[in-house]
Image 1: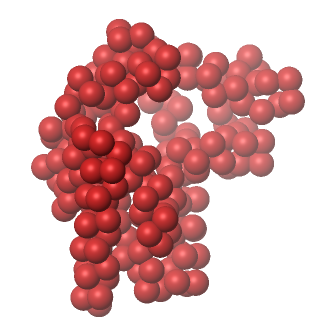
Image 2: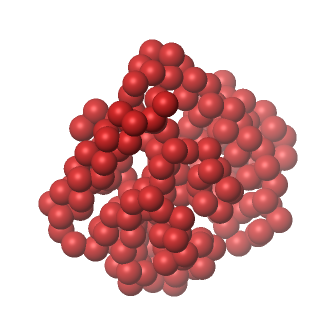
Length: 204
C-alpha cells in the first residue's frame, strides 16, 4: 500500500483535496476525525483528559465539550502541551491500527492521511509521499474568517502557532496551489493522483 501524507495549515484547502482524492479512489483518513474518536467516552484518551482537565469540560451527557477544552488550552501553552501529550499518542496508535487494517484488505491501494502537523511532529517521514496544500497567508486568513466566523485577530493568532506554509512546501513531494478556483484545485489534485498511481505501480 502506498502511504501518502496530506498536510497544510489553517484554511489551506486540504479538506477539499482530501475529498477529491477519496472520490478518485484513495482511502482517506483524517487526523481530526481520529482526534474526535479518542475523546469519546469509549476512546483511549477520554479518561485521562477528564482527569487532568476536570468535569467542567463535560457536556450533560458526559461527552467532552471540545470548544470548552479548546478555550482552556488555546492561550495556555503548558496546558496545550499536556493535552497534546495525551491525545497525540492515542491518535497515533489508532491511525496505525487503521493503516494496518487497510494494508491487509487492500494491499495495492493508496492511503491518504490528512493531518495539520505532520511536518511539525516529524511523522511525515512515515509516508512514501507528502502532499502540501498551499496558498498565501492572506487567503488563509480570509477563508478562516468566512468559514469559522472568527475575527482577523483570532485567525492571525492561530496561524502564529503553525509552521508557515512557505516552510512546509520545502518538505513536499507534491504542492497543490489552492489559491485559485475550486475547479483549479481539483484539476491539480487529479494530476497528483495520477502521479500517485504511477508511484504505486513502481513501489516494491
